[in-house]
Image (cartoon, rainbow, N blue to C red; front, top):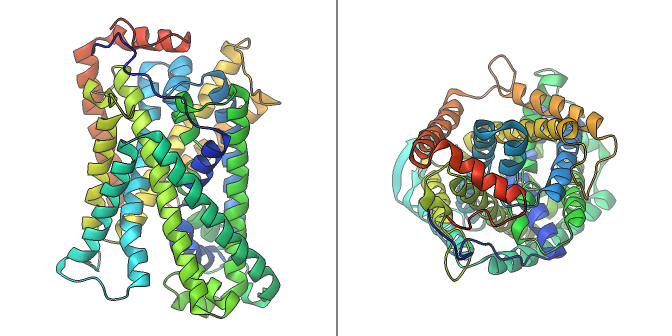
Length: 478
């Protein structure tokens, strides 16, 4: 682990529009195309909106803690830096490794979502039956589309942050344009009678809302990519916090309005008969098949933005852990020309390319297991925020949250409450297969963590982090 030439420095090239597109595009992937219909069926139209509003409030509070910490400590790795400063070595690893699970699960989700949307555009393209998982037939052509897509996104991120940022901006604009068409059209042509039932009472109003609420963290994960890429953002530190919060608030409105527009256009029977509710609702708005296909294309754009952003976020988090001696050093290597963490990107690419082999049921498993990782990390960040407010009140905070201790306390309570939603005894508890995914990920990380700690020594991370927190080159003289 030697580098005294600055070869491990990331390039600071991301402007304001790049950062906003990165975070917002990450939060509006493909999930809203696939899952909006099931959200409305599970909780009712107003129940689903309620779940996203309440979940969104929790995410906004957590986002405020991120915004302050990101402006105060704009180093690569985000959660890794904050939790280390506040809570120490092991807590920092757990926090960062669980958010990486969230990122990898999203990247893997998109590798499964791509062949799903291709099937919508080209019915019956799936040939070459391989096996059946959870009642779903996995075919060779279906797997091939997911794997090729995953490898393509891996290459885009491998060759540089500038290329990835350009792709992100263009595709996010396409999603916004189509979304505005759909929402305005639904508001003018929709019928409020189709929104019945407002709340699903079959499993209890609260149970229905909780069924949707468990998916909210997964849908909103993405704003936290900003802190991961902090060393590549070319903005005043205060502006990093502002852009982060703008992206979160924009995403809350997006999801609520997409649910509203869909419920205005499709009644319960139409929702039950629909494979992809939002494209069908878009087709109903304009009474033309082209409109549905346009929404499918917006969904593909969402796949690209989310896929792209979480390659960036996940690879930078792994990079930060490796450079702090918490993961093997080879995962902290930067490409000499492209300045990207190549081995971390390759690791994510390999893992996500496995997901299509398990078929479409994998989508729900990834949402739930990844969601647990995300809310665990949010809890650690909120706790770090509170600890640093008390321990280091004089820390320079360019973006300082008003009533910070109250906001931080609420963020801790709400994020812990979201963790509880996933645990046994909750109506929305993880399934056994989802616990296997979560447990296998944690075991993999702990094995690498303890190997790395034995290999590099317990003082290594302390020295690296001290230099980084002091604003020095953390890798100089190694």
